[in-house]
Amino acid sequence: MSSGRLSGELLSGLDAPICLTWELTYGCNLSCVHCLSSSGVRDPRELSGAQARAFVDELVAMGVFYVNIGGGEPTLRPDFVELVEYAVSRRVGVKFSTNGTTMTRSRARRYAEMGYLDIQISLDGASASSNDEVRGEGTFDAALRAMGRLAGAGFGPFKVSVVVTRLNAGELGDMLALAGQFGAELRLTRLRPAGRGVASWNDLRPTSAQLREVHAFLSCHPEVLTGDSFFHLGPLGDEPLAGLNLCGAGRVVCLVDPVGDVYACPFVMHPAFRAGSILDPGGFGGVWRDSELFGALRKPPSGTEADVCNACGSYGACHGGCMAAKFATGLPLDGPDPECVLGHGERALAALAAHPAHPAVHGGRGHDTPGRPVPVAFGRRAPSHAPASAPPPTR
Image 1 (spheres, rainbow, N blue to C red):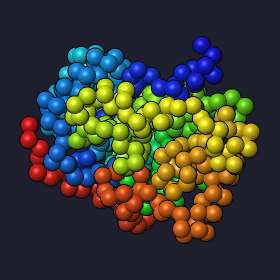
Image 2 (cartoon, rainbow, N blue to C red):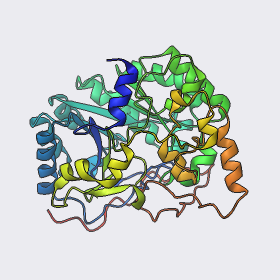
Image 3 (tube, helix red, strand yellow):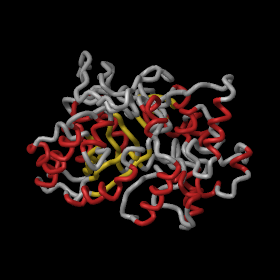
Protein backbone atom coordinates (compact mmCIF):
# COMPACT_ATOMS: atom_id res chain seq x y z
CA MET A 1 0.00 0.00 0.00
CA SER A 2 1.36 3.44 -0.92
CA SER A 3 2.09 5.94 1.86
CA GLY A 4 -0.63 8.24 0.50
CA ARG A 5 -3.24 5.50 0.53
CA LEU A 6 -2.14 4.42 4.02
CA SER A 7 -2.47 7.99 5.30
CA GLY A 8 -5.97 8.12 3.85
CA GLU A 9 -6.93 4.91 5.62
CA LEU A 10 -5.58 6.23 8.92
CA LEU A 11 -7.28 9.61 8.57
CA SER A 12 -10.69 7.94 8.34
CA GLY A 13 -10.05 5.89 11.47
CA LEU A 14 -9.78 2.20 12.19
CA ASP A 15 -12.16 -0.32 13.79
CA ALA A 16 -9.92 -0.30 16.86
CA PRO A 17 -6.94 1.83 17.87
CA ILE A 18 -3.55 0.48 16.87
CA CYS A 19 -2.48 1.36 20.37
CA LEU A 20 -3.69 3.56 23.16
CA THR A 21 -2.19 5.37 26.10
CA TRP A 22 -3.45 4.21 29.48
CA GLU A 23 -2.55 6.32 32.46
CA LEU A 24 -2.95 4.02 35.43
CA THR A 25 -2.34 6.58 38.15
CA TYR A 26 -1.44 10.21 38.75
CA GLY A 27 0.62 9.19 41.75
CA CYS A 28 4.28 10.07 41.32
CA ASN A 29 7.34 10.41 43.55
CA LEU A 30 8.86 13.09 41.29
CA SER A 31 7.77 16.56 40.23
CA CYS A 32 9.20 17.04 36.72
CA VAL A 33 8.76 20.60 35.53
CA HIS A 34 7.44 19.52 32.10
CA CYS A 35 5.07 16.79 33.33
CA LEU A 36 2.19 16.46 30.87
CA SER A 37 -0.27 15.33 33.52
CA SER A 38 0.83 17.46 36.51
CA SER A 39 1.30 14.21 38.36
CA GLY A 40 1.98 13.85 42.06
CA VAL A 41 -1.13 12.62 43.89
CA ARG A 42 -3.31 9.61 43.19
CA ASP A 43 -6.97 10.10 42.36
CA PRO A 44 -9.09 8.12 44.85
CA ARG A 45 -11.48 7.29 41.99
CA GLU A 46 -8.85 5.25 40.12
CA LEU A 47 -10.19 2.17 38.34
CA SER A 48 -10.29 -0.84 40.59
CA GLY A 49 -8.30 -3.94 39.76
CA ALA A 50 -11.44 -5.67 38.51
CA GLN A 51 -12.37 -2.72 36.30
CA ALA A 52 -8.84 -2.57 34.90
CA ARG A 53 -8.85 -6.28 34.03
CA ALA A 54 -12.28 -5.95 32.41
CA PHE A 55 -10.86 -3.15 30.26
CA VAL A 56 -8.00 -5.42 29.19
CA ASP A 57 -10.57 -8.08 28.25
CA GLU A 58 -12.35 -5.56 26.03
CA LEU A 59 -9.08 -4.63 24.33
CA VAL A 60 -8.53 -8.33 23.61
CA ALA A 61 -11.99 -8.60 22.04
CA MET A 62 -11.35 -5.52 19.88
CA GLY A 63 -7.97 -6.75 18.68
CA VAL A 64 -5.93 -3.86 20.10
CA PHE A 65 -2.23 -4.61 19.57
CA TYR A 66 -0.75 -2.97 22.64
CA VAL A 67 -1.13 -0.27 25.26
CA ASN A 68 1.28 2.44 26.36
CA ILE A 69 1.00 2.56 30.15
CA GLY A 70 2.01 5.76 31.86
CA GLY A 71 1.03 8.13 34.60
CA GLY A 72 2.22 9.51 36.96
CA GLU A 73 4.64 6.79 37.86
CA PRO A 74 2.58 3.67 37.03
CA THR A 75 4.77 1.31 39.04
CA LEU A 76 3.59 2.99 42.25
CA ARG A 77 0.17 1.44 41.82
CA PRO A 78 0.17 -1.56 44.20
CA ASP A 79 -1.22 -4.01 41.63
CA PHE A 80 0.87 -2.71 38.73
CA VAL A 81 2.90 -5.83 38.07
CA GLU A 82 -0.16 -8.06 38.34
CA LEU A 83 -2.08 -5.91 35.82
CA VAL A 84 0.83 -6.02 33.37
CA GLU A 85 1.09 -9.78 33.76
CA TYR A 86 -2.64 -10.10 33.15
CA ALA A 87 -2.45 -8.03 29.97
CA VAL A 88 0.49 -9.89 28.46
CA SER A 89 -1.08 -13.23 29.41
CA ARG A 90 -4.05 -12.17 27.26
CA ARG A 91 -1.60 -11.27 24.46
CA VAL A 92 -2.10 -7.54 24.75
CA GLY A 93 1.38 -6.06 24.46
CA VAL A 94 2.39 -3.54 27.09
CA LYS A 95 4.89 -0.70 26.88
CA PHE A 96 5.23 1.23 30.08
CA SER A 97 7.18 4.36 30.94
CA THR A 98 8.91 4.68 34.29
CA ASN A 99 11.30 7.07 35.99
CA GLY A 100 13.22 4.01 37.16
CA THR A 101 13.14 4.75 40.88
CA THR A 102 11.24 1.53 41.69
CA MET A 103 13.40 -0.73 39.50
CA THR A 104 14.77 -3.28 41.93
CA ARG A 105 16.83 -6.22 40.70
CA SER A 106 13.99 -8.61 41.47
CA ARG A 107 11.52 -6.51 39.49
CA ALA A 108 13.92 -6.31 36.57
CA ARG A 109 14.19 -10.12 36.55
CA ARG A 110 10.40 -10.44 36.74
CA TYR A 111 9.95 -8.08 33.80
CA ALA A 112 12.57 -9.99 31.81
CA GLU A 113 10.51 -13.17 32.19
CA MET A 114 7.42 -11.62 30.59
CA GLY A 115 6.61 -11.67 26.90
CA TYR A 116 4.92 -8.83 24.98
CA LEU A 117 6.53 -6.27 27.27
CA ASP A 118 8.55 -3.16 26.48
CA ILE A 119 9.92 -0.65 28.98
CA GLN A 120 10.84 3.00 28.58
CA ILE A 121 13.14 4.66 31.08
CA SER A 122 12.59 8.42 31.14
CA LEU A 123 15.79 10.45 30.96
CA ASP A 124 16.08 14.04 29.81
CA GLY A 125 19.79 14.70 29.66
CA ALA A 126 23.13 13.04 28.99
CA SER A 127 24.38 14.20 32.39
CA ALA A 128 22.99 14.96 35.81
CA SER A 129 23.38 18.69 35.21
CA SER A 130 20.97 18.75 32.25
CA ASN A 131 18.62 15.96 33.35
CA ASP A 132 18.18 16.89 36.99
CA GLU A 133 17.33 20.50 36.17
CA VAL A 134 14.07 19.18 34.71
CA ARG A 135 13.40 15.90 36.50
CA GLY A 136 14.77 16.56 39.99
CA GLU A 137 17.97 16.00 41.90
CA GLY A 138 19.24 12.43 41.83
CA THR A 139 16.99 11.31 38.97
CA PHE A 140 19.85 10.88 36.48
CA ASP A 141 21.61 8.41 38.77
CA ALA A 142 18.32 6.62 39.49
CA ALA A 143 17.59 6.20 35.78
CA LEU A 144 21.06 4.84 35.04
CA ARG A 145 20.75 2.43 37.95
CA ALA A 146 17.44 1.16 36.55
CA MET A 147 18.96 0.81 33.09
CA GLY A 148 21.82 -1.21 34.52
CA ARG A 149 19.43 -3.51 36.35
CA LEU A 150 17.33 -4.13 33.24
CA ALA A 151 20.44 -4.84 31.20
CA GLY A 152 21.78 -7.09 33.94
CA ALA A 153 18.52 -9.06 33.98
CA GLY A 154 18.75 -9.63 30.24
CA PHE A 155 15.79 -7.42 29.39
CA GLY A 156 16.33 -5.87 26.03
CA PRO A 157 16.35 -3.86 24.12
CA PHE A 158 14.45 -1.45 26.36
CA LYS A 159 13.99 2.21 25.42
CA VAL A 160 15.53 5.40 26.76
CA SER A 161 12.77 8.00 26.38
CA VAL A 162 13.87 11.62 26.02
CA VAL A 163 11.70 14.74 25.83
CA VAL A 164 13.68 17.10 23.61
CA THR A 165 14.16 20.47 25.30
CA ARG A 166 16.36 23.51 24.94
CA LEU A 167 18.60 22.02 27.65
CA ASN A 168 19.29 18.70 25.92
CA ALA A 169 18.84 19.35 22.19
CA GLY A 170 22.62 19.56 21.81
CA GLU A 171 23.13 16.24 23.61
CA LEU A 172 21.21 13.89 21.33
CA GLY A 173 24.36 12.19 20.06
CA ASP A 174 25.53 11.66 23.64
CA MET A 175 22.08 10.31 24.56
CA LEU A 176 22.25 7.84 21.68
CA ALA A 177 25.68 6.69 22.82
CA LEU A 178 24.49 6.41 26.43
CA ALA A 179 21.54 4.24 25.42
CA GLY A 180 23.89 2.06 23.40
CA GLN A 181 26.05 1.41 26.45
CA PHE A 182 23.09 -0.46 27.96
CA GLY A 183 21.99 -2.16 24.74
CA ALA A 184 18.95 0.15 24.66
CA GLU A 185 17.22 2.09 21.90
CA LEU A 186 16.78 5.85 21.96
CA ARG A 187 13.28 7.30 21.65
CA LEU A 188 12.73 11.04 21.29
CA THR A 189 9.46 12.81 22.00
CA ARG A 190 8.31 16.38 21.60
CA LEU A 191 7.88 18.80 24.48
CA ARG A 192 4.23 19.84 24.60
CA PRO A 193 2.64 22.72 26.50
CA ALA A 194 0.42 20.63 28.74
CA GLY A 195 0.13 19.99 32.47
CA ARG A 196 3.13 21.56 34.21
CA GLY A 197 4.56 21.98 30.74
CA VAL A 198 2.25 24.98 30.27
CA ALA A 199 4.42 27.05 32.59
CA SER A 200 7.76 25.68 31.37
CA TRP A 201 7.11 25.44 27.61
CA ASN A 202 8.37 28.88 26.61
CA ASP A 203 11.58 28.40 28.60
CA LEU A 204 12.20 24.78 27.63
CA ARG A 205 11.05 24.47 24.02
CA PRO A 206 13.89 24.13 21.53
CA THR A 207 14.87 27.16 19.50
CA SER A 208 14.29 27.27 15.75
CA ALA A 209 17.97 26.54 15.19
CA GLN A 210 17.79 23.57 17.55
CA LEU A 211 14.73 22.19 15.75
CA ARG A 212 16.73 22.16 12.55
CA GLU A 213 19.50 20.31 14.36
CA VAL A 214 16.95 17.80 15.66
CA HIS A 215 15.70 17.23 12.12
CA ALA A 216 19.25 16.73 10.87
CA PHE A 217 19.97 14.28 13.69
CA LEU A 218 16.84 12.24 12.99
CA SER A 219 17.57 12.22 9.27
CA CYS A 220 21.03 10.80 9.97
CA HIS A 221 19.81 8.29 12.56
CA PRO A 222 16.70 6.51 11.28
CA GLU A 223 17.17 3.93 14.06
CA VAL A 224 16.09 6.55 16.61
CA LEU A 225 12.41 6.12 17.43
CA THR A 226 9.96 9.04 17.41
CA GLY A 227 6.36 7.81 16.96
CA ASP A 228 4.49 10.83 15.58
CA SER A 229 6.33 13.40 17.67
CA PHE A 230 8.18 15.35 15.00
CA PHE A 231 6.04 15.35 11.88
CA HIS A 232 5.84 19.14 12.22
CA LEU A 233 9.49 19.19 11.09
CA GLY A 234 8.52 17.62 7.75
CA PRO A 235 8.94 20.77 5.63
CA LEU A 236 12.66 20.81 6.45
CA GLY A 237 13.41 17.75 4.33
CA ASP A 238 12.67 16.20 0.97
CA GLU A 239 11.60 12.94 2.60
CA PRO A 240 9.36 12.49 5.66
CA LEU A 241 11.00 11.41 8.87
CA ALA A 242 10.37 7.89 10.12
CA GLY A 243 7.10 7.51 12.02
CA LEU A 244 3.50 8.57 11.48
CA ASN A 245 3.54 11.97 9.80
CA LEU A 246 0.07 13.09 10.81
CA CYS A 247 -2.08 13.45 13.91
CA GLY A 248 -3.61 10.11 14.89
CA ALA A 249 -5.88 11.44 17.65
CA GLY A 250 -9.22 9.63 17.61
CA ARG A 251 -8.21 7.84 14.41
CA VAL A 252 -5.56 5.33 15.47
CA VAL A 253 -4.76 6.39 19.05
CA CYS A 254 -6.48 7.78 22.12
CA LEU A 255 -5.98 8.00 25.88
CA VAL A 256 -7.71 6.45 28.88
CA ASP A 257 -7.07 8.21 32.17
CA PRO A 258 -6.87 6.71 35.69
CA VAL A 259 -10.64 7.00 36.26
CA GLY A 260 -11.58 5.54 32.87
CA ASP A 261 -12.32 8.71 30.91
CA VAL A 262 -11.42 8.49 27.20
CA TYR A 263 -9.74 11.40 25.42
CA ALA A 264 -9.04 11.72 21.71
CA CYS A 265 -5.49 12.97 22.13
CA PRO A 266 -2.93 11.57 24.56
CA PHE A 267 -1.70 15.13 25.09
CA VAL A 268 -4.96 17.03 25.69
CA MET A 269 -6.92 15.93 28.72
CA HIS A 270 -9.46 18.73 28.51
CA PRO A 271 -13.28 18.52 28.48
CA ALA A 272 -13.30 19.58 24.84
CA PHE A 273 -11.49 16.37 23.92
CA ARG A 274 -13.27 13.96 26.27
CA ALA A 275 -15.12 11.35 24.20
CA GLY A 276 -16.70 9.27 26.97
CA SER A 277 -15.77 6.68 29.58
CA ILE A 278 -14.91 3.01 29.51
CA LEU A 279 -17.47 2.70 32.32
CA ASP A 280 -20.29 3.92 30.04
CA PRO A 281 -22.85 1.24 29.06
CA GLY A 282 -21.18 0.61 25.71
CA GLY A 283 -17.73 0.35 27.23
CA PHE A 284 -14.59 1.47 25.47
CA GLY A 285 -15.73 -0.07 22.19
CA GLY A 286 -18.86 2.05 22.21
CA VAL A 287 -16.83 5.21 22.76
CA TRP A 288 -14.39 4.33 19.97
CA ARG A 289 -17.12 3.49 17.47
CA ASP A 290 -19.85 5.98 18.31
CA SER A 291 -18.28 9.09 19.86
CA GLU A 292 -19.36 12.25 18.02
CA LEU A 293 -15.95 13.72 18.74
CA PHE A 294 -14.12 10.79 17.17
CA GLY A 295 -16.50 10.89 14.22
CA ALA A 296 -15.69 14.55 13.64
CA LEU A 297 -11.94 13.93 13.81
CA ARG A 298 -12.22 11.15 11.24
CA LYS A 299 -13.93 13.26 8.60
CA PRO A 300 -11.83 14.20 5.56
CA PRO A 301 -10.15 17.61 5.71
CA SER A 302 -12.67 20.27 4.75
CA GLY A 303 -10.21 22.50 2.94
CA THR A 304 -11.03 25.32 5.37
CA GLU A 305 -7.66 25.37 7.07
CA ALA A 306 -6.45 28.81 8.03
CA ASP A 307 -5.24 30.83 5.06
CA VAL A 308 -1.61 30.54 6.06
CA CYS A 309 -1.77 26.72 6.01
CA ASN A 310 -3.99 26.56 2.95
CA ALA A 311 -1.50 28.60 0.96
CA CYS A 312 1.57 26.76 2.25
CA GLY A 313 3.17 24.34 -0.16
CA SER A 314 4.38 22.20 2.75
CA TYR A 315 0.97 21.33 4.23
CA GLY A 316 1.20 17.81 2.84
CA ALA A 317 4.43 17.29 4.78
CA CYS A 318 3.21 18.42 8.20
CA HIS A 319 -0.63 18.31 7.97
CA GLY A 320 -0.78 21.46 10.06
CA GLY A 321 1.24 20.01 12.91
CA CYS A 322 0.16 19.00 16.41
CA MET A 323 -3.43 19.57 17.48
CA ALA A 324 -2.45 19.46 21.15
CA ALA A 325 0.23 22.11 20.80
CA LYS A 326 -2.18 24.41 18.97
CA PHE A 327 -5.01 23.92 21.44
CA ALA A 328 -2.79 24.43 24.48
CA THR A 329 -1.35 27.70 23.17
CA GLY A 330 -4.74 29.09 22.15
CA LEU A 331 -4.17 28.79 18.40
CA PRO A 332 -7.05 27.55 16.21
CA LEU A 333 -6.94 23.84 15.42
CA ASP A 334 -6.98 24.61 11.70
CA GLY A 335 -4.07 27.03 12.07
CA PRO A 336 -0.30 26.51 12.02
CA ASP A 337 1.63 24.57 14.61
CA PRO A 338 3.16 26.98 17.19
CA GLU A 339 6.57 25.52 16.31
CA CYS A 340 6.03 25.60 12.55
CA VAL A 341 9.53 25.45 11.10
CA LEU A 342 8.60 28.00 8.43
CA GLY A 343 7.79 30.61 11.10
CA HIS A 344 4.02 30.68 10.63
CA GLY A 345 3.44 29.57 14.22
CA GLU A 346 5.58 32.27 15.78
CA ARG A 347 3.70 34.91 13.81
CA ALA A 348 0.36 33.41 14.84
CA LEU A 349 1.42 33.43 18.51
CA ALA A 350 2.50 37.06 18.22
CA ALA A 351 -0.85 37.97 16.69
CA LEU A 352 -2.62 36.13 19.48
CA ALA A 353 -0.67 38.03 22.11
CA ALA A 354 -1.60 41.29 20.44
CA HIS A 355 -5.33 40.53 20.71
CA PRO A 356 -6.25 39.84 24.36
CA ALA A 357 -9.79 38.95 23.27
CA HIS A 358 -8.46 35.63 22.02
CA PRO A 359 -8.72 32.67 24.43
CA ALA A 360 -5.87 32.24 26.89
CA VAL A 361 -3.70 29.16 27.09
CA HIS A 362 -5.95 26.18 27.67
CA GLY A 363 -3.50 24.17 29.70
CA GLY A 364 -4.14 21.08 27.62
CA ARG A 365 -3.53 17.81 29.35
CA GLY A 366 -3.39 17.38 33.09
CA HIS A 367 -5.72 16.82 36.00
CA ASP A 368 -5.06 20.27 37.40
CA THR A 369 -7.74 22.83 36.56
CA PRO A 370 -7.31 23.56 32.83
CA GLY A 371 -5.38 26.75 32.27
CA ARG A 372 -4.08 26.98 35.84
CA PRO A 373 -0.29 27.24 35.51
CA VAL A 374 2.02 25.53 37.98
CA PRO A 375 4.83 27.87 39.07
CA VAL A 376 8.28 26.86 37.88
CA ALA A 377 11.53 28.50 38.93
CA PHE A 378 14.47 27.63 36.71
CA GLY A 379 17.83 27.46 38.38
CA ARG A 380 16.10 25.80 41.35
CA ARG A 381 16.01 22.04 41.16
CA ALA A 382 12.63 20.35 41.23
CA PRO A 383 12.02 18.36 44.41
CA SER A 384 13.02 14.74 44.00
CA HIS A 385 10.22 13.42 46.17
CA ALA A 386 6.68 14.77 45.94
CA PRO A 387 3.66 13.36 47.77
CA ALA A 388 2.65 10.20 45.94
CA SER A 389 -0.57 9.20 47.58
CA ALA A 390 -4.06 10.30 48.43
CA PRO A 391 -6.60 8.10 50.19
CA PRO A 392 -6.16 4.81 48.29
CA PRO A 393 -8.95 3.68 46.00
CA THR A 394 -11.18 0.81 47.03
CA ARG A 395 -10.08 -2.45 45.45
